[in-house]
Length: 286
Image (tube, rainbow, N blue to C red; front, top):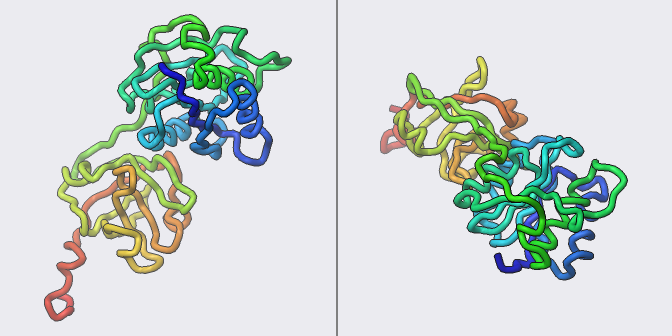
């Protein structure tokens, strides 16, 4: 792969400590002038699945080059670090499933190596900061062309890399059963349910939809935009990633409806007709 001079960087380091800045500094010292795109650093600490989903949502909008992803609760163990070549560039990070969904999204792994070479690591006294000592140097030399994939370690079968199983949607008895995949900073809750899943049970845009959360139910409108619902009203919409999301106009769905990542949710068509069908031409209820 030709040098890219671009590293797209994701982590769970947050912004309260110096960790993100230190990784930037390591890259700049090894490969001056390398551009770093910060995808995000507020992945919940140690939440590999949340990090994998964030990377999956972002990957199609990132430039080809090197992806550096570090959400690594197994740091210091024998979990291994890898560099994975794809048709869109090289992914660098821990072999714990973090990279797997995004790698699959861009067409799968062409080849992979273990990050074993001491030549491309920082000297260290401990093993608690592989993001600084192992992954950042590897990403930097790959982005700059200072080293090739083969220079970093021994080849491994891409099929042996850790996968990450994501929950599937279930259709049955007129209900689509799915899961909240993430909650964004506005309190909107993205599910793993697609518009096509809802079409299979006869639900279409503009319909009233019942959201089932445990023993609680909420009736929502499948709206085209946030502003299509009244202020404070819950709504369902297809988000920018093409999945169904739950929102509250002017508020937080997570707070109002008690939603969080990993929560099981069901969606079904309401017994009511589409909202426009409630009124006749004079605006009176039928």
